[in-house]
Amino acid sequence: MEVKFERLHFGYNRKREILHGIDLNLPSNKFIAVLGPNGCGKTTLVKQINRILRAQSGTVQIGDRQVSQLEPSELAKLIAYVPQMTSGVMNGSVMDTVMLGRRPYIQWKPTDEDLEIVAKALIRLNISHLSQRLFNQLSGGQCQRVAIARALALKPDILCFDEPTSALDPELTGEVLKVIRSLAELHIAMVIVTHEMGFAKKISDRVLFIDDGIIAEEGTPEEIFDHPKNSRTQEFLSQVL
View 1: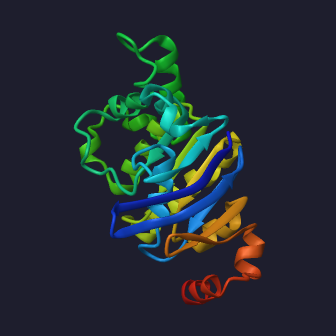
View 2 (view 1 turned 180 degrees about the vertical axis):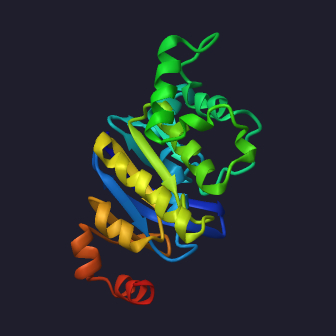
């Protein structure tokens, strides 16, 4: 499902604007990597999609409907969000935590279909053996696997990741990125904010480079990593590659 930004402005107060007139189309069923220096507006941009943050002006549109016009229950069924780190946040079991992904669909109690969807998400993330473990007793890598399984249990049209490996050591980072890479075969729209350049170059369909609240450059991984046109993109990549 396509996401479209038009003339979007956002700031946490009137004196400090973070995003400056964003015009952007995120195509359906593609893997989009969002890159840029710390504090440039990457996370802020992604949080406009699921309305965690609301723009001061401009619009975000999903399909043919503006995000601002969608009921929370409708939006919750469209978009799943995996934050930077969820360790220690939940007190229930892994099964209960992943079942939270079905919350927008559950009326009185989970149906057989809900249980089957959650079971498949646990299998896909290779954490079925952890189903009865308490979430807050898991390792960081396990927590992120559970968070991704919870997102998949929603069966979303759009899956957003906000630096899902930022709090992990290198070994666990590789483990989680391998899981995310495997999700590309689901053919849903995925947007990931990441500092993992090799991962972004290898797996993404499109790359956005954000600098100081604007889209400085957008293109294929080859265009951005091998032939960047923007001087800020060139400078950033020369420092991190």
